[in-house]
Amino acid sequence: MAGTETATQPLDPYKESNLDKEATLEHKVEDLSHFMKHCKFAMMTTRDAKTGLLMSRCMALAAQETGGIDLLFHTNTTSGKTDDLASDSHINIAFLTSHGEWASVSGKASVVTDRELVKKHYSDHLKAWLGDLGDGVRDGSANDPRLGVIRVKMITAHYSFSRKGPIGQLAEVAQGVITGKVATPNKLREISEAEVDQWRLSH
Image (cartoon, rainbow, N blue to C red; front, top):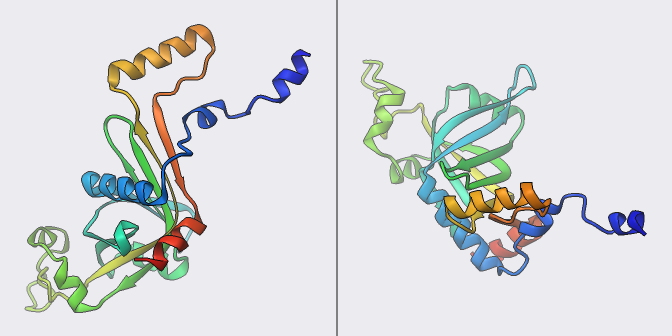
């Protein structure tokens, strides 16, 4: 009997207990969009064009499109990450807060050099990252030909929000240590590829 009972238990009880299966697609997307905008900074992971190894770097979110699911980041088009994307357009964008809440967006990216799009989301702080080369052209302004936009089109997303405050989370974990009962401090959500396609149809 014990063996039969164990066989019916989920092998990943944490995910099974914390996965939110009730939220609507609209609710999931709106919460994720708000979370990403609030976080602002994310780790962008690409595959290195020379070595094939994965590489991550911190990027500032410039804007969102398609009702919040597609992401825009300014970039120097002469940087290594643009070479990575030319070799392999698959990309991951990961957001994390100091409270342990996180979001992971998997998608495909393209480098866009349309000047109107670049200028629409341009901010002066970009000069600090591009620098002024003193040639009157590559000056870090919105007209700098080096400046482009990485557009990330979402394929799937996964994210986790805290159900309780820090004290409540600690209590959940402590109870799990004592009783063996899986902790449920978080609300896990998934947005599938089919759901992303559905969202695009109306946005």
